[in-house]
Amino acid sequence: MEHRSQNPFAKRPIASLALPLLAVALVLATAAEAAYVTYLRAFGDWSVACALDEPTRYRWCTLQAPPPTLFDGRSEIAVAEQRDGSFLVTVRVRDAVLAGAPVYLRIDDHPPYRAEPTRIGEATWRGAEAAAIVEDLQSGLNVVFRWFAASDSQPRDEQFSLDGFAIALADYRARLR
Image (cartoon, one colour):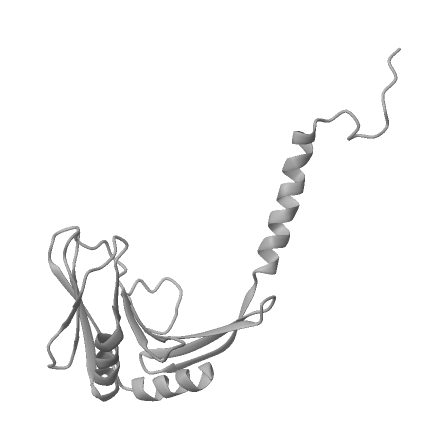
């Protein structure tokens, strides 16, 4: 008669123990990355949201249109102020964008700003061009962005009101400080 150890791990190879330990480590790591929304306010088509990453105490804010909703399906425009005071303006198209076709952003009757989108439909303006866009957004009535759909190569336009943008920008900047 063979004697069997009562310890269930005694004869198991190390590899069989690694999977349960890895699962526990992933669960703990995921829980440690929790961030919480600490502020959310809408200003017409625009919203300011701030969140806090508890473990690192890192806080960040976003300024975007439209306000975040579930399953909206609309594209987004976001304005971000960098640590050096410069701006980034980003358009995220929620449709398949025609490869090689630009994205245009136009405020009222001003000439459009042009950017090349990434393959996932994100176009970004930086530096002096982003600063000019933010200035135009503060004094404008409407912003329209145009892209070309991959499905039929036709242009698509989305429009957002700029009513409330200047107040949202001031609120966003105050919350970053």
